[in-house]
Image (tube, rainbow, N blue to C red; front, side, top):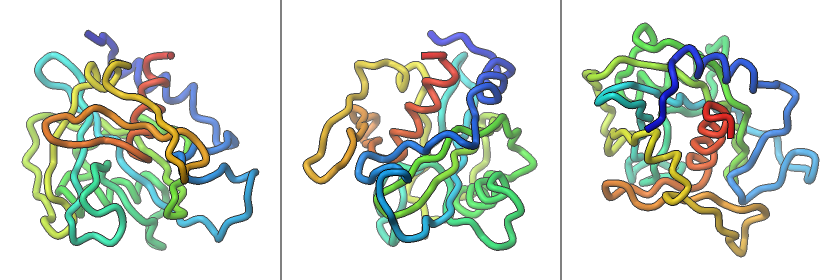
Length: 202
């Protein structure tokens, strides 16, 4: 059982975030210094952290099949940066509100982790925030098929995920064992593992 406080999570995020660090990847693309690409598209996701049943959980969504990008895949709430967004935190919170009705006033931002690049040419900034459980979500069914949580204890267990080399991928891709019928892999799995390594000091 993981025993870590909210204050410890926030401090480890603060210590680990360095804006100049090179982004990691979803496995399918190179890092910025390795190849010239079209201008990267700005995006941010919220890593929604909540505590119930005496342990920490992360909240995920399964994207609706109607979505153009990553349809049917497990993801964190998030999306494109808007010109009206003053910060990446605003982007992540706005998207979480639009997708699942998680209000900014109910989220306490703890920090960021370093960016991840994707095969779809996004540079994603993950923003970590805590919200209270249980929560009355208001899900946009056009964007989101399902909202669910996974415990940090399960996510942190190395027996539950692995890395593999796809023939078309430049770097290893992360995938988790199925969880309640859901498959966590790719960029979202990479973000999850990056987050866990930071807060667990591994």
